[in-house]
Length: 484
Image 1: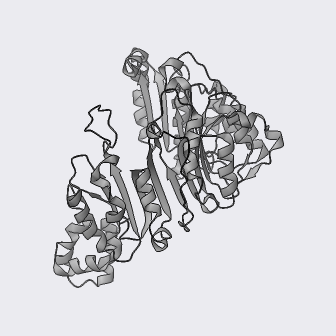
Image 2: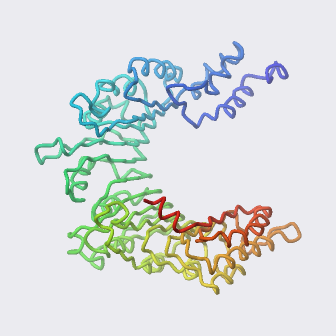
Image 3: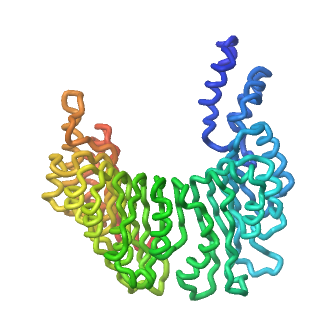
């Protein structure tokens, strides 16, 4: 249609149009289940095809999914042809292995990452190209192959997302083979999704020992860090201290360790992360309950905009710990805010045993625009009225409450959203304060469905004002049955 209406459009204009149509920031998925926009455009006519082929940016981002039934030679050939069109442009390659671990006891059945199917994956699909971004799921020996590539290949990598398979059940000795990452000289983003097969009864210290494999990562130059393995407090502090001058986003899973108890926070120097804007911390209680809080109090984060705190409970993952009750002193967040004034815009809190007073939180952090509260959060009637008037949370645009036991307050909360949103629409111009809501999600126990009948019409009316208000009315008995 475009060719028929505008046959003489200049090549640079067509190229810009094609870039918008192809959305080149997204990778193409192999195997190809349908023709991506790249192929559709290139098949219209010879002129369009030449424009597509001449622009390397259309061919440098791919995602490859391997299955156990995949024919390796076929999977390699098409992506190699595709990437060859990118020529010397740095590529983004993401590998995904489906069913790469199986519980099968058959002696002939092995995890996919041990199959011959991908023993040459580094040689065939990584080594020929300069990879700016690389997402890989493979085992120890693949990582060794990667780190043995020439300097000109490794120095091109800026983003490394590693899903690393390390089988401790197969390790007979206690030695750890450290990996040498120093030749990845331009690395700025590192993510680790570890898959560690522990012996029965292993402790978090096993994960920390495993993590020593990555001690050679150039932390000092990383702007983005995401580590999804459980690490002791001291190791997390070491990572932050080494990268603090440039770090912008960070996600860590923090566990207790006895060595931290021998060095109380009062004897440690605070860590100033001057550039950190997003921080996600999962507190994983094992031995004591205060190390996670002490970890937070050692951080100075003047530019922090987004904070996610996940207070885990052992009973979330292990049935034998169902009787364990883990409490968290949530006043830590207030102390953290007081020692280093932060202008937080987003705060997400999760955990089954976090008692959070939403009103006190909004009064302490007036800059919040997005707030997600855990299951034990509470909103007093006075706090709801203050929020409605903008006396607290005047900039709040998004609110999520995961506490379903708010049957007595749900009416006031819905009315608060309506009043605040309606006043913002007066005279067709939004008021400067309070900011109107954009999104609100509430959970409410409603065994007989009576509350839903009462408030459905009001919810629809609020949504017509431009607010996305969702209230999930729940039957506690059905929810319990679904959980089991």
